[in-house]
Image (cartoon, rainbow, N blue to C red; front, side, top):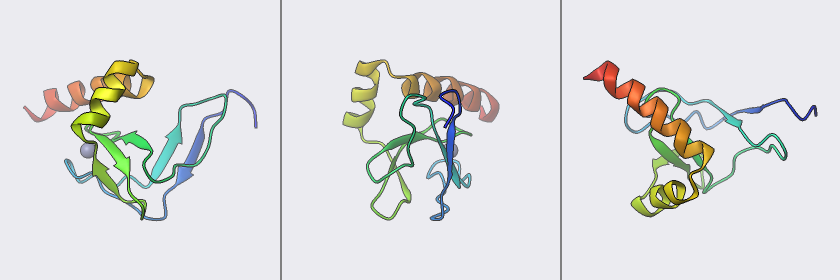
Length: 95
Ligand SMILES: [Zn+2]
C-alpha cells in the first residue's frame, strides 16, 4: 500500500450514531504509517456530529466514557481534534 493512502473499511455491522442516528457504515484509519481495520474497543468519531464513539464486541458503536474522552484530551490526539471541529460545526447547525 502506498504510504499516503487512507485505509477505509466497509462495516458490515452497519452501526448508527447514538446521538444523530447517522448510518456509519465505513471507517477510515488516519494512521498513515500502519493502517488497519477497526476492532472492538477502538475509538472513532461520528463524521456528522463529532460524537466520540467506541466499537463494541459486535462492532456496533457506543458513546465513549468520560475516562476515554479524558484520555484522548490528554493525548491531544488527532482524533480528539477532529471530533472537536466536527462537533462545533454540527452544534452550530442544530442550534
Ligand atoms: Zn452522530
